[in-house]
View 1: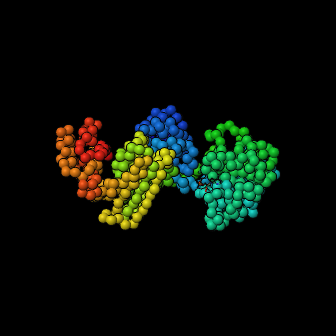
View 2: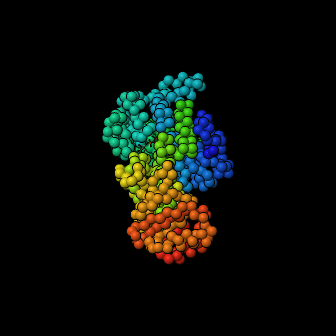
View 3: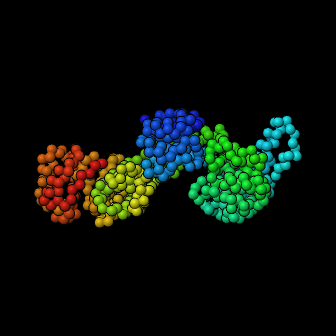
Length: 526
Ligand SMILES: NC(=O)C1=CN([C@@H]2O[C@H](COP(=O)(O)OP(=O)(O)OC[C@H]3O[C@@H](n4cnc5c(N)ncnc54)[C@H](O)[C@@H]3O)[C@@H](O)[C@H]2O)C=CC1
Ligand SMILES: O=C(O)CCC(=O)C(=O)O
């Protein structure tokens, strides 16, 4: 039974979901904060479920020798080293929608708190003061809200702001004109947004492109008296510049849920009467935490138990419904890849996967990734469906996918065409009773199942070869399981694919290569 570690505080419903779906689970809500402990135990687990306290960086991923999936109960994955996970073949998944409404509501709540000085007024009133004139606020009706990043959360914020009768200007390079119209927002470039906004709210992920998007220079483009909200990620906003501009009176107020360094326990903006601050509470509602916990447990269990992949940031999606149908084809694609990969000795240049017949209607991305993984596996140690396409790209190997509706003699065929520096090789296969079967090699028809140990030879089609090969194997004490033959034309090129019971030694291979008419002999393992 696969085993998952939950190393951050997640709704315990997640534990129930894991168990119901056949996954063993250890719930250790504070373990993620103890890096050494995490490193010492992670090797026992197939999955790691986190929120933001656990830093699933390269050393953790490396120590997780059995690790297959890291699940983020939430959206931001800046606490997970995705390239390291990809390189290690570990699927990273998140729950992109589960806390979006809650976080958007927090941004709206922060906006009101900020412009109506509610936290400050609350503290004063609790102290028995009645400072009516100290807390003069600002109305949001008719004001312009600038939304930077109009994805899941930004668009909900925009929708709520439109409901409040605000004007909304959005900057997002991926926001289409149609979507902007649908949301009732005006699409603008960043400079226009900054010059027009009374209140700016940022909702982008933290990436190299967005880091410091509210830089000193950009903050200075805001109108005097504008307000700033950050409920996305610390690092999007220059906190020092914000402090200076609040002090100068250029910016009237700020509402911050996130900070460059978290937990933020000591910060130059703390105690500033113009700043409303919360400790990364954006996603902290019962509803959102229940949503993300259930969702991540379902997704991780679906992956570990059924091979379904959803909301992955580094692997093609496979729904739970299609997983059982894809599974045998994934095995076929990988075996065909392994066959071709074991024969490829010179620089690999291109992997083309051609799908013919009914299979062309399936989700082909995971099949192609499996074929690529199969090809690369004999050359590289740690390769799987997750990292194979990236590794191929890094090594300059191009990947092509072709789909044809018709298949000649079979309902579904996968043809693999591998181009190396010296030759192009093809191998094709189908499923017989759900099991992978080779039906073509190098253009020669062939019918063979895959076996753990196989001998593949090419030879001139001359009398005596089959007997000589059988004798050589017999003399080496090698039991033959199946013996499959194919040829181009009588007397032309021929191939043999022989399943044997044990691994083929180098000695035996040399003897086979020395037989008359043999042009090539390779030991294959599947
Ligand atoms: N405070 C909290 O507790 C929470 C914070 N978050 C954070 O909220 C942020 C937004 O999350 P989602 O809306 O779910 O993400 P999303 O991926 O749905 O939307 C992000 C949007 O930003 C846009 N974008 C990317 N680069 C941009 C750039 N250079 N300039 C302008 N726009 C750009 C994208 O096109 C996309 O539409 C993330 O940083 C996430 O980590 C999410 C949940 C809770
Ligand atoms: O889990 C949390 O409380 C933080 C949520 C968050 O920041 C996210 O989902 O990106």
